[in-house]
Length: 197
Length: 212
Image (cartoon, rainbow over all chains, first blue to last red; front, side, top):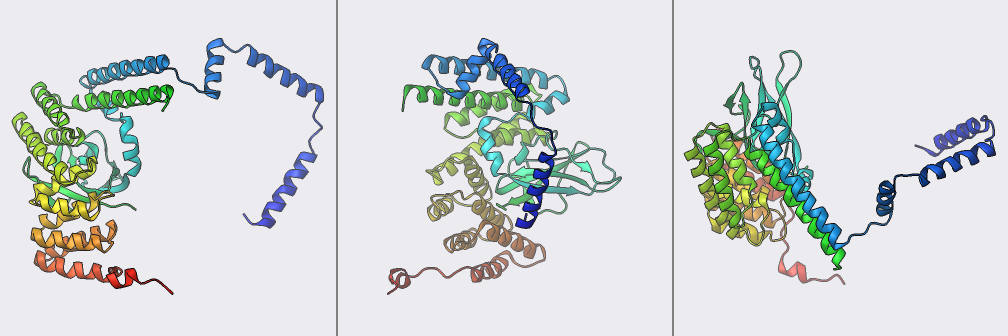
């Protein structure tokens, strides 16, 4: 924004404020008083939490309790996810969306890579590779337009990656990418090289 | 460090551990076959007890599931990966970055020797060399002799080539080879081209000369 534009904006704002009726001092006092009353009648636990947020402090006992509760919640939720995932594919999709806290920084380093596959007759297509743990439910592809190519974007960290497309349940190499021999399972996979942008 | 901050760090570490454990359980649950899941769990324990990260092993197991491999094949693949990861861990020390270790293991799988990994580590001791390892792996996979590929990558690293330049080199060599050029000739030509774009290496004389 240039200076002339800013001055014009300030002038317009000043004119708009001048057109408003003056504030009633009594009404202002009533609003302040009501806010004070509400603050005073806050639930004791909420008030304590708000106080802790203002001046956070840890005791050894509280930290230990927090850690123990965290472990219990973590393992219980993990088991719940495992049970749910073994029940239905939709649940499995939710399960893989969980990301451990340790991976948050790693995800930030990842680079968005567009994927395209021309498979007109396919009904479901997804990308699988080491960047999404070869999970066919993690990165479904969308058809571009009515009968256009399938597209998706994957997040991959800098380095070399191997991947493939899952076309109607069948692993298919990317026809536009170089191939790599799979030394462990045999066959071929496509290669993706990612660098920092 | 005060008692309070120590307790806070312990709590944070346990939070991370709990989240990681639940995420790993969720990924294991993607393996529907009980025998395979048990085999994978045992292999994960074996790897992590040796100080190796679990993620590449989990990925290798799920790759096998996606490829409809048998339990025996998945177990063998994970065991082979553990052997490569241990070698990469030793060669790339002191780094224990999971991406570097996985890239090192990939390089070993195509025939790059541990000595080459050590040389790359020594050339760039303070930063990640995942991209450099990936380019070396690709060059060797395209048929470039290991010694020539290693020397080219080391030379380019020493001259300050960026990841983008190295990746472009690998892509160009791959294209040349696909077009019928011999891999060693393709790397020689493309390597010279990249080197010509880089600043000359500092010499002893001009490093020591101080402006008057």
